[in-house]
Image 1 (tube, rainbow, N blue to C red):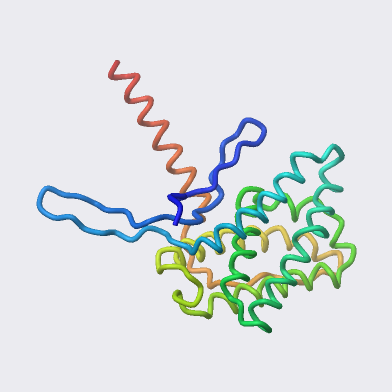
Image 2: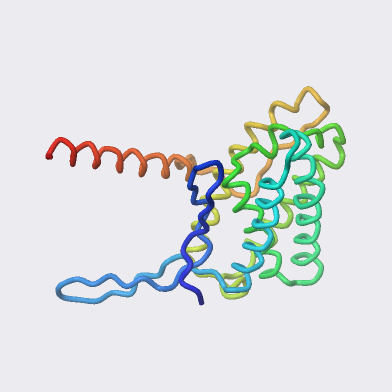
Length: 223
């Protein structure tokens, strides 16, 4: 298993860390004991599928020389819709849950980077049936995959927790954005995971950035 903890992406001068994809077992050493602490782990096949799909979408973004609306339309029809359809088929009809998870994680990596930009600025909503069906299928695919055991999926318990946390954040973002489309005969809310009221994973990242900034200020004061 490769020592890959995160997928990092440099776009427009900004380094972002979309989501943990895979990691080996981390070992914590103390003066008296050595304890194996499991890190987030996903099977290599999941990592490769997720990486390939998210890279294709990121490459499309980088190469696009038209407006954001047309770009997001292309992302929807070239990647989002067909990928979700394939994931549903793999997990509900063929029982290939790990393969479906790879696709879904790839989409999550993209969505975690792009926040809800792909949803905010697009014209797919004008095709209300296609638009709502996408979110229905997204829910079906994720719920079917998450219903499987960790062993069946090729992940560990930590990875499941990380996935659910990232999903909860994106679910909240999607639902906030989807309210905008209520006036366009689109009535859909995403309900993949239970909302337990915990902070968004985005907020955690911001808190870490703030902490880093505080440490830098302390260092400067000390100097």
